[in-house]
Amino acid sequence: MIEKRPFRYFLNRNHGVPGIAVLPEGGYARAKAEIMTWPGYAPTPLVALEAIGKAAGVARLHYKDEGGRFGLASFKALGGAYAVMRVLQAELAKRDVAREASSADLIERRYKEATGKITVCCATDGNHGRSVAWGAQRFGAACVIFVHETVSQGRRDAIAKYGAEIRVVPGNYDDAVREAQKQAEANSWFVVSDTSYPGYTEVPRDVMQGYRLMADEAADQIGEAPTHVFIQGGVGGVAAAVSVQMRARFGAGVKLIVAEPDKADCLLASAEAGEPVTVPGDLDTLMAGLACGEPSLLAWQELERGAFAFMSVSDESAVECMKLLAHQTPPIVAGESAVAGLAALLLAMQEPYARGALSLGPDSRVLLYGTEGATDPEVYDKLVKN
Ligand SMILES: Cc1ncc(COP(=O)(O)O)c(C=O)c1O
Image 1 (tube, helix red, strand yellow):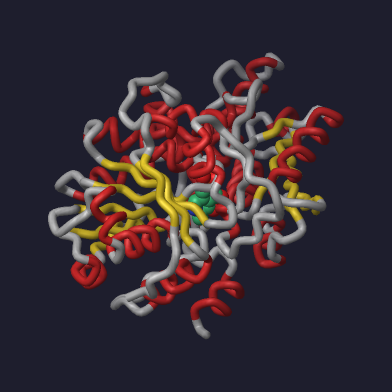
Image 2 (cartoon, helix red, strand yellow; image 1 turned 135 degrees about the vertical axis):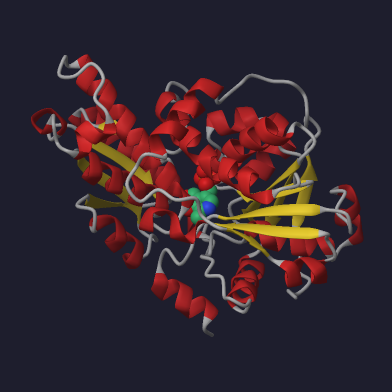
C-alpha cells in the first residue's frame, strides 16, 4: 500500500503513571456547550477505511475527517476561535463593559466599541492563524497573524481573507511565536497561542479544550472502543486533547500513538530525553502544520504519561498516504498534515518488531484523526496529482 521506509518509534516508559489533570472537565463542558451553539456547527464524519484496514491487517480502521470543519478545513477551527471568544469575554468583564457577554452578543456586535479596540495575535504555520482570524472576525476584534517565511502564499491568503493583518517573520515557527509575544507586549495585544510555555497556559488550555470536541464526536460515532489511536503531533496540543478525551470516554486502556514528521519530532525527542526538549533547525517538512520544534508545556504534561508511544515518519510516506486516501471510493481529501498517523500505522504494520511493540494485530481497532483537508489546494494538487 505504501512503501517500506525508515521510521522511528519510542515506547513511553512513563505511560499510565498518574499525573496532573491538564484539562479539567468543567472547562471542557463549557467549551463543548459553547461551540455546539455556533452557526455552522456539525460533527465531522467518521469514515470506515475498510479496504486499507484489511490490507494493513487490523480488524477495524476509522478516519475522522476534519476537512469540513466550519468551512476552515481543519480541526483547528475548534480551538483558536474559541480561545479568542474567551479572551474577549474576559476583557469585557475586566473593563466593566459586560460581566458575562455571550458569543451571540459578540456576533451581534453588542459591545463593538470595546471589542473593536482589542487586538488578538498569534504565530501560525497556517491552520491556527486561520482559526484565530476567523474568530476575531466573527466576534469583532482586530487581528494580527505572524507567519514564518515558508508558510505558503495560499495559507497566508486564507488567513487574510478573514480580515487579519499578516506579518512575515524570518526563521521558523518558533521564531514567529517569539515575535508574536514581543509585539503583543509592545502593543498591548492579546496572544492567542496554540502552544503554551512557562507563564502562559490559560489561553492554550482553552484552545485544547476546544479540540476535545473532535475526539468526543469520534467517541460518539465509533461504537466499539478503539484499541489504538494515532494522532499527529506538532506542539502536541491536539494529541494531548485527544489523549484526555479518549481516556475520559474509554478509560486508560486505549493506546495513544503520537506521529510526527522525522524533520520536526520534538515530542519523540522529549520522550527519549524524559523532559521537554527543542529540536533546532528550519524544520523543513512538507507537513507544514507539524513543523514545530518545541513542545507545548501543557501538552507535554499530558503526553509524558498519556501517550503509549511516539513515532516519526518521512515526508515521502505522508505523500503516499495522501494519494492512498485520494484513491479511495469515495475519495478522501487529506492535507499534508493530516496523514502522519496513517503513515505511522501502515509503516508499523509492515515491521514485525514495531507491530509487536505497539501490540498491533488482527484484533486491533484503530482510530485515526484526519486533522485537515486541502488547506492549501495548490500544494495539495501538486503533491497528489503527480
Ligand atoms: C492539520 C494539523 N494537524 C495536526 C496539527 C498539530 O497540532 P498541535 O500543534 O496542537 O500538535 C496541526 C497544527 O497546526 C495541524 O494544522
